[in-house]
Image (cartoon, rainbow, N blue to C red; front, side):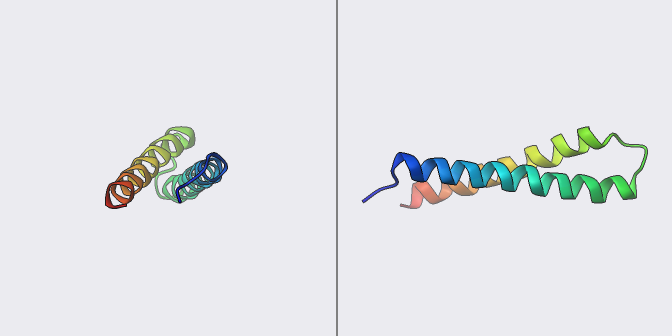
Length: 65
């Protein structure tokens, strides 16, 4: 009993949407504090941070299985 291919697609889609959606929200909030910074760079930064954290948590979960 493992995770099948379709399940991995659902997990990947949720990971993608969550990372970029939360990255957008964090970039928007940070842009309000520092209007001189570029929004697209903030979005890329926060999306990378969140994506890395999710990957780390996912890897730890796989190791513990």
